Every structure is written in structure tokens, then in C-alpha cells.
Picture 1 (cartoon, rainbow, N blue to C red):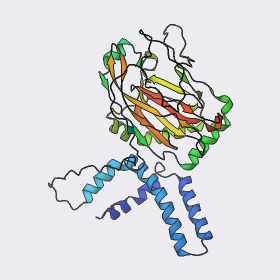
Picture 2 (cartoon, helix red, strand yellow):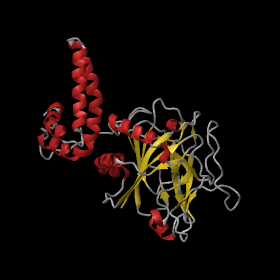
Picture 3 (cartoon, helix red, strand yellow):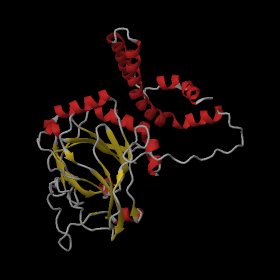
Picture 4 (tube, one colour):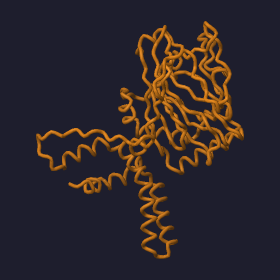
Length: 364
């Protein structure tokens, strides 16, 4: 079978599965083609050009979702229908390396890996254009330490080194889903409240506290239907994400989701997402980036650090992966990884111009 014949044999399956292309999305494509046909004044060349552009855009989305849903079965069908004689070994092909800064595959973009730097026990200073956030507070020698507090039980179960790793997927939501989420966020500005961090005092009964020296941003906890939309999409890619991260598959025991708005000077210092008993069951972190177009902020980079354990805490080794916020992009990484959000620059200081994320955690 030729590659085209193999793909054609799955066309009916792709069209029937709403996880790959929903009915409203199919209707939208059909409407676009009808309008293009009506507006082209019966010009076959124009119609074909419009059709090719739409097909290219839709094809990337279908390929990404089909891989998540049908990847394993497609491989089995290819092997069954190939002309390869039984018993003949498959030769491993070297994995193609994309050009620097280009996507690593359909919908997947490799994060930028900063060159290795000597380990340092103080946070990396912001670039000259980034505002300096308030100090976290002095350590034993009057300097800030880049560590994450943990219980002794948690430390015993965790490795000595935690290398930075993540999976980045582009064009994660359909255009209408992204538009609806952005509109919902801007309409609920009044419902946002100051971000909290987990209280270090286990006896005070307080789950979270506001600490502007460690974190500054605003959050919205009630996401209405947008939480379900995001979680359903995450579930379709979860097996492949876990495989790429080398993490065990698991049953989702709980989910935490919020929209975070970061405006001028907002930041989040070094931390992990499951470093205390209150949040120890968190397993996978996800961060979905979105914003109003055109983008009117800079900074707000997600940095995931290589870390090692020293004296019961994880300490940054000074090297890290950097993910620059991009529209309609999602990042997945293990909750125990040490990470930070660099300061945001937003000259207008308008809420609508903020760096927005729909972020959360899957518990097991």
C-alpha cells in the first residue's frame, strides 16, 4: 500500500471521531469553502488556492489529534498492510532533527535549552529589561536561596537529581475555543483575586497565603465550561505526553485548574508544585498560554531548571529550559520540577493586555 492509500483507509474513522475534528469544526470548514466558492466568481484557480490554504491549516490540527487518538492502531495497520515479508527486521531510521527554533513535529515545539551554567545558590538575575521583583528574604547568610521546602517523607521518595524536561504542543485549542476563553477571561476581570502560595505552617489551618515577595499575579478559579473543554483536550494527548516525559500512566484522582493573569512586574520565584504534604498528590503540571492580539507584554517566560537535592531541598543547578509564551500553546511537565516565571513587562498595565495562562495540576 502507498502512504496515500493507508491514510485514505482511515478517512472515515477520522471524520467520525469528534476528538479529532468536532462537528462544529467540520461545519465551519464547510462554510468557509462555500463562501470561498461564492466569492471566487466561478474561478477554479481561486477556489483551488483557497481550498489548499484551508486544507493545510486543518491538516496540521487533524494530524496532531489523530496521532494522540489513533497513533498506536495506525502503526499496527501499516505493518499489517505493508509488503514487508514476515520475519524481515525493520531497520531503525535516525530521527530527523528539525532546524534550530523550528517545530519538532506537528503541533510540537521543542523548548529552548539554555547552555549549562555553574550551579548557583541564588536566583538568576533578571535581564536588564526585566523589573527586579521584591526579595524573597535572606537565607542563613543573607542571600536568597533557590530551594523548595519538602517533608522528610517526600524527600525519601524523590531522586537526587531532577533534569529539566517538558512537552510543548502548539495550536492546542480550536480557534473558536481560544476566542471564547479569551472573551470569558476579559469579561470576568472583577472576579480575579490575588494569587496565593501554600502556607508553610501546617498547624494554622490555612491552605494558602498571599506572599508578594514570592509570587505576584491574579487568579480566577471558576472557569465554567472552559475547564471541561481544556480537560477533555488534555485527556486526548495525555498518554503520549506521559510517554515522552517517561512518566507512568495513572488514573486522574483530582484536578485543579485556574486562569492566571500576570501584568507589569508580576512574577513567580523558584518553586515546585508538589513540594509539601498538602499538594504531594499532584503529578503533572500543565500551562496553557493565551492573550489578546496583538500581544502587548514581554517577559513572563517559564523557566524549568535542572535541580539536585541538597540537605532535604532541591537546588537549581543554574541551567534551565526556557519556554517563551506563545498564543494557543500548552506545556506539560512533572510537578516536582523546579521552575519559575520571570517578571512581566506590560507598559499599558491594562488587565486586557496581561499574560494569561490556563494552568493547573492533575492529581493521582
